[in-house]
Structures are given as structure tokens and as C-alpha cells.
Amino acid sequence: MDKLTAGRLLRSNTRGCVVGCHISQSPPDFGSMIYIPTGDGRIYGLVYDIHIDDDGLVRQLAASDSISDEVILDNRLNRNTPLEMSILFIGYESNGAISHLLPPHPPLSLDTMHLCSREEIRLFTHAGNFGYFRYLLTNPDLPIADLVAAHIISGYRSQTATDSEHWKTLAIDRVITLLRDNHDILNQVLFAISDAFNAIVTIQED
Amino acid sequence: MPINYLELKPQVAEYCQQAHDRIASRPEKVSLAINLLQRLADELQRGQHQDLSIRVADSTVKRSALPAHEAPNHAFQPTADAEPYALLASDGSQITSSHHDILPLSVINTSTVYMRPGSGQAPQIQTQTEFIRTQNGSIAIDFMPEQLVNTSRDVRELQVLAHFSHNAICPLIALGDGPLELFQEPRSGETHQTLFQEYLQALFTLTKSGRIIAGYTDKPRADLVVKLLEWIFQTQQALDISSITDADIFSRLLSPGARSAIFALHSPSSSAYQGDITLHFFYLNVGSSSHPWIVRVETTASTAMQPGAVALLQHALLTQCTLMGMRPYPYILHRAHEEAVVHVDEREGVMQMLSSALTQMGMNPGAQSNKLNAKELGKRTRLK
Image 1 (cartoon, rainbow over the protein chains, first blue to last red):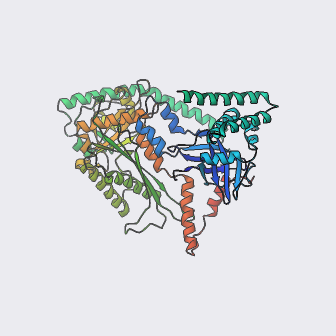
Image 2: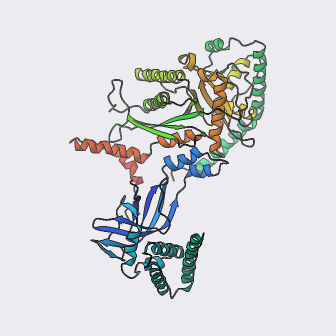
Image 3: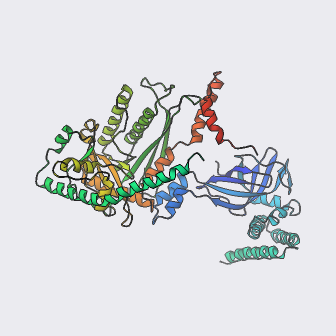
């Protein structure tokens, strides 16, 4: 697996997929935007869950008084314990055209997943009018507030310096519009976005 | 539900009653055995029983312990610290087939795990998968008895320990799962004899390389020390220490971390293990004060006669067992097992690989028997 490959597809449907990678690899962050190459383009998605399954040995080791470095490395490097990432599809690209609709076909087993660069995020988020937000905001199984906040931070950082504030305002306006009938969720999302940007300001001040 | 539980229920009660009677009589028998062990130690110190190895060879006793260079009732505490050392463990698994399968298949899968405690480095793992070969070197394509495959696996497990390249200066402890004495039944036949000689050769190679050698038996049911006591004292007094095991004795004698004295092993095949590879063993309490857990550690004379090597082995086994928490077992042996074990789907994968290759060559690989096919019908699930 080359450096740019963030994992390989384990299972999928038209709304999302699960990608696995070795536990020793650095997985994409929660909320990262990724793409999966297809025959004539690529499928875009967001990482909304990262999980590591246990097994009997790990449970037993965790309960022991002390674990040596060799044992920890053995479990991370040698044992077959995959790290799984759940991906929400948010659009696709076909023959150079970006769409914020769901992909017409799911990707196939063992397809590779790659992390989007800032330029790729900028191009995707500028195409259309945030139509893909409906996938983030209407699925009760997702950690909606944190996922939206993570995505807006990521999108904000990927815009050009002159365009980032404008893009952020448009994105938040779109969130408010889509959640105008669901005040509970809207409040949670706005609080999460506020927390995320406060954290950025704090880091910059430090 | 193939089990007739109604019929079984009264038998369960009968089973438990018998077990209760045996368990109830055990503490008294264990106390008697401990007294006899003390008496044996005293008599040995006074110079008695000097010809035990000769006498036992002429007796009808098939398997028993023999006192070695340490007082048989003595317990040896572990050392707190140890010099740097490395551990090497091997384990094996096998694929066998019957004439009901599509093709005859005899494959062994052997793993080795090498680790250096305190190095901060991940263990190194190697796996070898190979078809079993006949004596002329060609792959065995006829059905092979399961016992022969198992013996071949045991030989390969020891060979990978013997031939592992170890360049570090520190001592290397080579660990196997189960006793070092090769179990083979029947012991006759040219192929078995060849394998046995290969096994002895690998054991010699291990001893010559200066490696500390151990075969680890968890939950041992051996009664070798019991048999020794019965044999020595049976004619002198009426005693009944039957139905107890050595572990029953040493779970009382050994505090957590302590090991028993080293004993030599007398068995029908012990005459084949001579010189540096003469088999010895000791018991080790890898449990805690509230949950003693006795294991048997078999080793060779080359290790048993070096107090420093035995102390290092004891330290290493206890450290490994501690890694596994409440259910002590050497971590490295468990990992070797994990890496070696062949699962059912992998067996089917190898069988499929062979069938496909034969089909591509224009050959008909054959089919599994109708009986096996019918048995596997239950595995299938309905289509959704």
C-alpha cells in the first residue's frame, strides 16, 4: 500500500462504505474528506467513524497489570487487527464533472481510498450549492454535529485566504436553512461549529 | 438435538457422585505423597536409593520420574532480575485429508516467533507452509495417516527451533508447546523411525548451539513423581496414592513463582535420549497465592545441569505468563499458536487451489464422497 493510500474497501453500498487499513498506518482524521477512484472518475466521502475491533487476546492483555512495549508492538504490527473506517458518500466525479448526488454504483471490494488534498476539497466544496449537506444532516445514525463541524473546519482551511470567511458563512447559512425545522439538531450543530472555530482561534493565539 | 438429555440426567448424577468421592479422598492422598517425598529426600541424603535408574530400568514401571541432582522435595524461588535474553517459540498445525475429500492432502504449517524482552522491538514472525514429502523427497500425494502427519509436524516444530539463526550475544531460550519427548504411536515402521532420528538430530543441534530448551505443558496430568513414590515405597508399606497427579502435590509445595526440583524422565523411549539430550523436567507454579497453577516444563540435560540456565528459564516463563494476566500462559507460545493454526476455510482454500491447478492442466481432480457432501449440507444457509 503506497503512502497516499489510506485503506482498502471492505464493503459498500450506494450511500457509504467501510474501509480497512492496518492498525500501524495513520488513519485519516474523523471528518476527513476522501475519494475512491472509479473507472471514469472518483467517489467522494467523509470519514464519520473509526473503530478498532478487539479479540479475546486483546481483552485478556488489557486486564493484565503491565504490558511490555514488545507486546504492544506485536499486537499493532504483527497481529491481524484491522482498523475500520466508515465512510459517508457525499458525491462523485465523472469525466471531470463533480456532482453532489450519490454515486450511481458503489465502489468494489479492495478499491483503494485516498485522502483529499486541500485543492481537491476546495474544488468539491465549490461545486454546486452544498447539496451534499443533506446526507450529513438527515441521517440520525451519524454524529451530525461533530461531523458537520469537522467538515466545515476542513473546508474553511482548504479555501483560499480571501475566500475562506465567505465560504464559511455560506456553509453555515446552508446548515441553518436545512435544519430550520429541527431546532434541537440545529443548536447542537451550531454549538459544535462554534467550539471548533474557538479552538482554532485559541491555537492561533497560543 | 441429538443428545437424549432425559437419558443423560441420571448418568450425570452418577458421574458427579464418583467425581465427588475421588475429589474428597484427594487431600489425604496428597498429604501422604508429600510425606513420602520428604522421606525420599531424607533417604537420598543419607545415601540410599543410589541405584534407582538401574533398578527402574529392570522394573515393570513404564513411566516415572527419577531424582536428579536436586533434593526432590525442595522448592526454588525465582530470581528478581535476569540478564538480557531472547525467546524463540515454535508451533505447528497441519492439514490432513481422508479418502472422502477431493484430493489427498498433507500439509504442515509451522510458525516461529522471536522476541527480545526489554528491547522495545516488535517480535519477528516467520511462517513456513509445506507439503509433506516422502523419503525420496517427492511430495506425498497418497493419503497419509494422521498420526504420521502429526509426528512430521512435531519434528518440523523442533527443526525450526534448531535451525533459527540467532546472532545476538544474549542467551536464547527455545520454547515449544507440550513435552519434548516425541509422542509417536506406533513407534515402529521405517518412516516413523526416520522421523524419530530427525527429531533426535534436531534436539542435538539445539543443545550444541547452547540454547536453553524447554517444552511447556499447561495443566499437566502426569503422575511421574507419584509413580516414583509408589514404586519405591509400595513394598514397604500399604499406601494408596492412586488417582492423584504430580500437579496435586506441587500445588501445595510450590509458592507462586517457585519451581520444583529437577527430575529425570524414565520412559520407554528415554534410552534414545542420551547425553546432552537426556530428558528432565520440573514443575512450576505460574499462578498466584489464591489461584496456584502448576505447569510442567520439560528440558534436556544440557539445560537442566546449568543452574543459571534453569533460573533464567524460570524467570522468562514467569515473565511471559504474567503478560497474559489472570490466565497465565507464555505469551510467545500463544502467539506462535495463533500464527500457525490452520482454519477450516484455509484448508478448503488449499484444496480449491489444488483442484483449480489440476483442472487447468486438463486433469479431472475428482470429487468428494457423497457421504462428506451430505454431511456438509447442514453448513449451507438459505439464499436471501
